[in-house]
Length: 346
Image 1: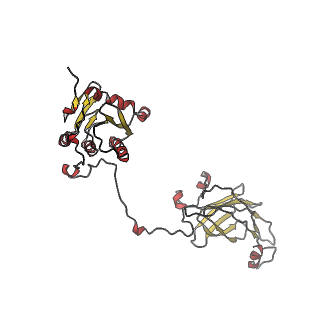
Image 2: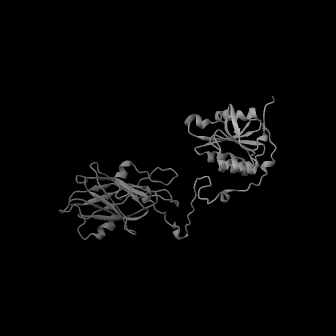
Image 3: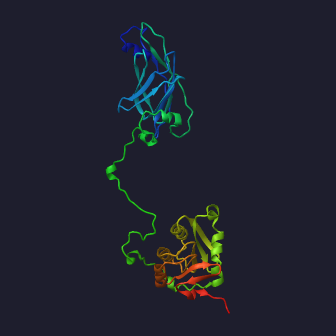
């Protein structure tokens, strides 16, 4: 390659710049996003302050670096491709050479500034054949110092991502966007009829009987099973109990609707619907939406530690759910279908 550079220079052989290019070794490229880096040291009395630049010959993308006082330079964020490397400094003739870098490659290139011959400063670029030790992942590791020296305006890593060779960008004209929310399902509806959903289970025909003593013990059993609440003090819970008071399933979440969804979802995945003969206990209040979810899952008894809404009471009476509010250790209010509650004798 040195002979190639000498042929292009019309000056004498003493004034020519010789680029002995190191062979860059990289791992095989995969179809994923990554950029490359060319780094090294410039040695010689005039090295500090010299400029090293890389320009993509196909796209015009360029990166520049100034040699530091320790002689180090680093060209980061280079998409894969062929680059024209230029080295210049005060009193130096600008010298160029083309290099090709692969996806995720980090190449070491040391540059030596030679002595002045015939009043012309000569830059001799020399490189060693280096093998880098890398994992099976194709990636580029960028230090905070390298981030500060990036030539681009933005420091967002995604701005330096590029497609691997041979990968075509998808046609954005085919994109379709769908929007969803984490609301309970009532928001955006125009009427009560619009949010009412018919259940496939005959909840009213469920003949479960719940002893009052077992019912009053549910809040303490629910609270005792809340492991995450013990650590945070800020989570709702929903628990599924048998009529005897035995806990079947418990889930926690920052949202009471989500906690109920988790309990019912667990039953759906296990194929246990309908949840006949069981009690759904919630740590908050009973809303219309929670009552409707209980009906859709075939739950005959819905209990809460706080108050129900008027719509929840109306729906519970309509579908035949026993709705219980203000359930504490010493009492409760029953708003619908009280015949399922077995009072103590005497």
